[in-house]
Length: 95
Image (tube, rainbow, N blue to C red; front, side, top):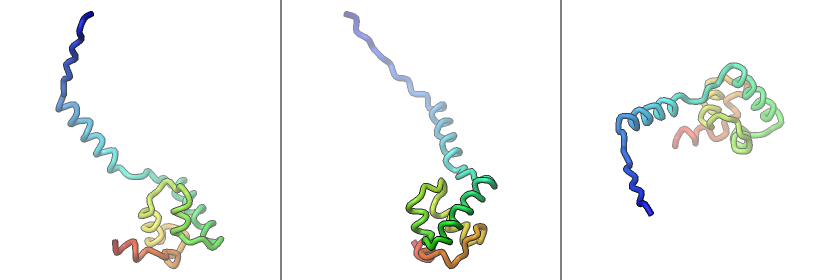
């Protein structure tokens, strides 16, 4: 039987480029275009009209955006929902 010997070669420059590309991709954020933003706005507006709190909507649905994005968009009044719906926004800011 022949013995096999594997030699592992580590290419630092190649790994550094992969790492830098990963950093760039992770910092791009969520790509919200007009269509998906308005779809999110309509969805949130319907749920709020039914009496659900914003925090419950975020927790129980997969919106595809972060909690901070929803709160920020509502606080800046980019969404149809008003600031009064931000039940735990101050607690979120103080963390």
